[in-house]
Image (cartoon, rainbow, N blue to C red; front, side, top):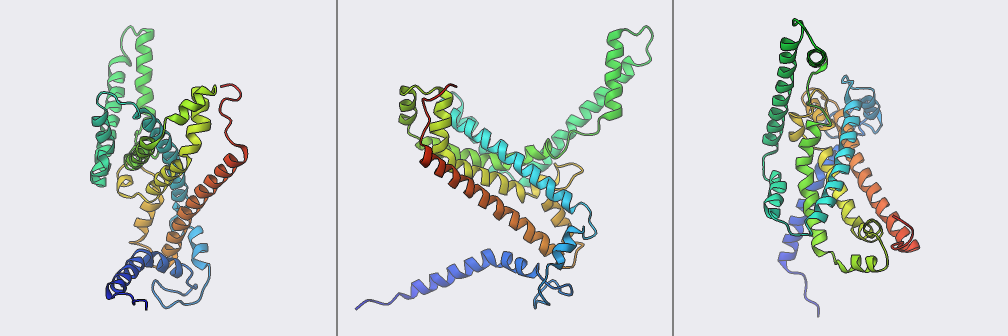
Length: 319
């Protein structure tokens, strides 16, 4: 006769159910409330079901830069993803060979994981502020020393024009794709590096040797042998890169300059917006994350299907 489940099973099941509720309950609540009717409030019960608040969202909700912030986050997330994948693969390839100082370089690369995000953000902002002051000071000195001087030469005129150009046009080096990009990479790159180091640590070099024995060049070996084998891991790195960048607030707060990303806009709206439109914005951001995950999985499945259908082309054609 089969024994019944122990009391511990039911206790642990209840704990797990509470964990799942705590983990996904807020997201589901926001998703449901975002479909409130036009007269609905910020809490239950629901007062009708409609897309009213999504229409209100795209109309601007009194904050015209919501769509701009969404586009900024998408552009920054895509660039961060691309840079994270490329650098992670290159670093993983490089660390397959032992070299002097590799351990120090490795721990330096991942050290930002344990640093407070706001400290990293402030540090990058101060660094770029120093760059701005240096460039502005250079322009002032060039104008002071080489503009309206007696007996000017071609060289002094050139330096003076550079100083005037700096004074008239330079504002700041801080921006979405300078300090903002750097701040996000300090968060995404360590994850990408750890994934690729683990992948290449288990990678069997016999596959590459076999490809070269069959006449494949170094590029063909990477393109047709290594890349297809590490493709699932690259999808993971890409997902880490985009999702970590997509919802980053602390590292963006001091580094993106005069523009706003969607998380920064969302945080600002929490203090001024008192309608379910903010839930609609949260639903949109969640939908984008799921869409990116779905596209990544689809791309991986397509790549696997093509590889099974066509096989490897290593050793064929030219470089």
